Length: 99
Image 1 (cartoon, helix red, strand yellow):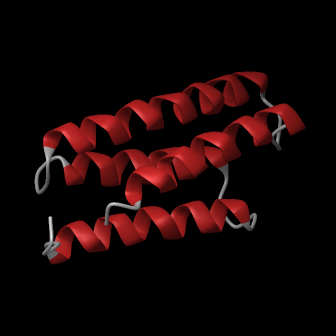
Image 2 (cartoon, helix red, strand yellow):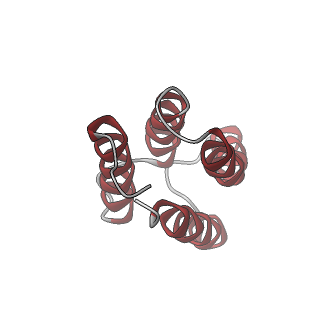
């Protein structure tokens, strides 16, 4: 994958930006999960399906944290949830490193 199509690069950059926004407190976990899911779905149309499946599997871990958070009706993640989310996001960033 020496030449990355512009659309793939744009989607990956958008995912990285969403993660930064979450880490800096500008994006809630539910919005982060939605943005990542949307971009992963769009990637499925333009790049390697096995790689996209890997991204989706990592995202599923984040969605579980998000679902439990939403169900709790709290306004902010607790320390354990935040730690788990950061761990998942680090895994996702590592998977994005290919691009």
